[in-house]
Image 1 (spheres, rainbow, N blue to C red):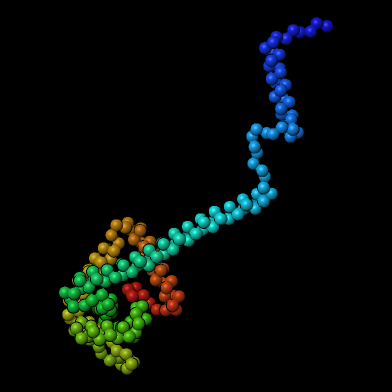
Image 2: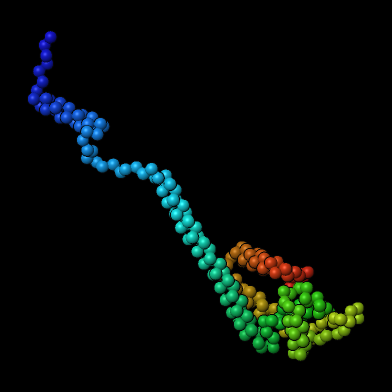
Length: 221
């Protein structure tokens, strides 16, 4: 049998492959140090990974809570700003007619419902009864309304608008509509409807929490 002659280049290649193979076997048997140091496994690696996940989730939760707290404070802030400055604006508009932002709702209601009972106002407005008594007395003093006894119940009285009140009530109504339009400026019709729904719901939430109930709303008629 003739042996095949192998060239020196191939002999060198085979020697190199053999040497590499030997080194690989030695590494597997730990006879020589591995050139690439592997990271030692930690027997607590699983626990450490879960701790990292927990800490990251907790950090995200803190961020969400902070954002929600910021949003909540913004809500209270802008409700306060809107309430304060719309009243200032309304007072300026109503000043020429001798009434203010705490009286216009009562005057509109009395002009719409002549002969309305004073006590029935307490079931319509989210206002303390003592405030209603003071407001009615102020409107009577300003010549906007008159009071007459109620034959069926002497404890209350009927309220009627005067000629002076009837002569300005349309202008007062227009001022109220103008103020509402100003507050809703920049909103589409659908956004205005949503805003009103959300605002009413917010009002009902807080009055329900305080156990305040009313038989009717201010301007349902």
